[in-house]
Image (cartoon, rainbow, N blue to C red):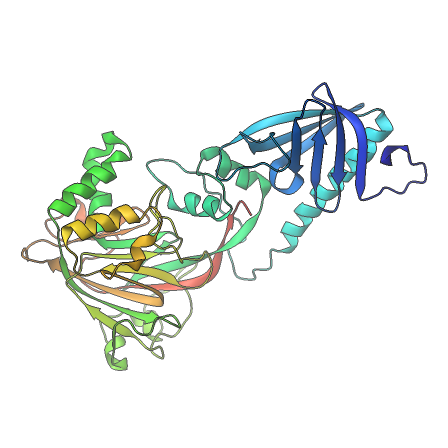
Length: 422
């Protein structure tokens, strides 16, 4: 028994007969893996992982109170976390046979927790990245970033799991996209949409009283009355996606309507703060696709909402945007595509163009069959540009950008830091 040693040497594995919440149990703690296990004669077995389930602990005499955040159904067997289940807060009272034993176990718990914290701090090696990590807690009708983070760790989408991820302190790098038109800039971490998805996202605001069901309802309305938009998109494909689009002449890719600073020329005004990635775009091989388009959807992470995964191959910090383009599609097939977005299988459809890009340029046009009406460009749930005749077009003068001139997106790999479940 580890607690009976008098030579001051504490082993990596501690074992002791203790009481857990008043019930006698055989307990063990592996200081190398962080596994705290115990089992009772009643057949109740537990396994707590220090790194992923324990918030902290405190010692009072012979008692150690372990504060944990565990899966609701856990407890039937060792390590039974059972997939994407909800978590719940729970305290466990470990009653040791002596204060000396409680001190030895507490020291081991503390050493391991400090090791985790120090390991996290040592991984902060970004020299130009955002040093203060972002904590994402889902609110409103959907949060694709929180869903993407939790799903990557196998956790269910919930406020409690998102808060726990922040408390644990694990961090990861996150790409940041600079959306630019002339001297106007917008920084995006989730997505940019034009066409069908933007119309549904913004125009469904009139049905906000329906909650998240407004998206499904308005999606159906828009499928019945399908819209297409004239326009053109240009992009620099990632390796392996060069097959998409037609080659674009280098002079055409850097002509005067593109913002000057994106073509290697100094900006005409002095900018304060971060102004986007410092990359030269004129030396890249651009491709072009002409409309009409049903939708253009750029994504930084896999999920755009709790149950919509438009970009199953998206990574948090790969330096690319995942683009979904639909140009022409029958209504019944398009409705099927929408239903398949809950698992990402829509990308296999012959109607979907799915690719990764390093840079992207959008030239939005007017609605097919109705040249007096434009579309909506939506970035991270905010309208940044809208054409004439769109929903709440009277507010157009307050939009950040103008509908029509090209809008360009470039990715700064791993610029931001974000709390993550793991």
